[in-house]
Image (cartoon, rainbow, N blue to C red; front, side, top):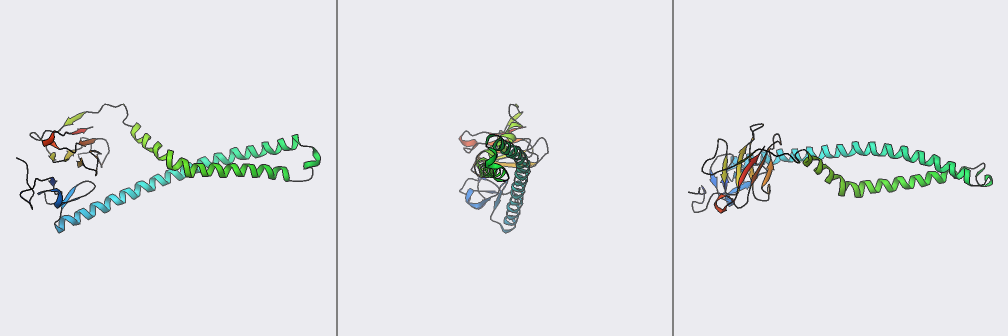
Length: 226
């Protein structure tokens, strides 16, 4: 028999409150990044703490991404300046060789023109990198590097059975709880837009939990890969 909401006995429970452990329907739960919390004051304090913690983690990830971008940009522009310096010398030499002496003798216009040409190319390269490459290609490259770590690797898989749940496992509605085999962290995966049905272990990232939005009563599946 399906569990009922502690506040509304006529409503089916969607999940349990991570703080008090009681079952509640969707209207009685606040959705955190990792767990669900009921409207009880003490439970809402834990909900606020979780939101703040994940906000700090998001800020840290943004900071790490920005630092990596700055480091790569520093190397890129250093190499670009070296290449443009060589180009500046070559252009200056070519101008002196190809033009008659009366056009450049005793003047600095040849190296100045070469410098302006190289400066123009540096500005163009800078704009292309910061406006186009960063926003359309660099972020996709980061995602590909992350996915490449598990690409082509067949992971062990365990599918949950509501009638035979293991220790530290749960499956209510479109949310399932798993225990990571690597770090023993218990985490929740929601089939809704919170996790879109897929979530890596928030502690070590080595296992992946999956939960269909349909839930077990409607033929959905929940599984853990590691």
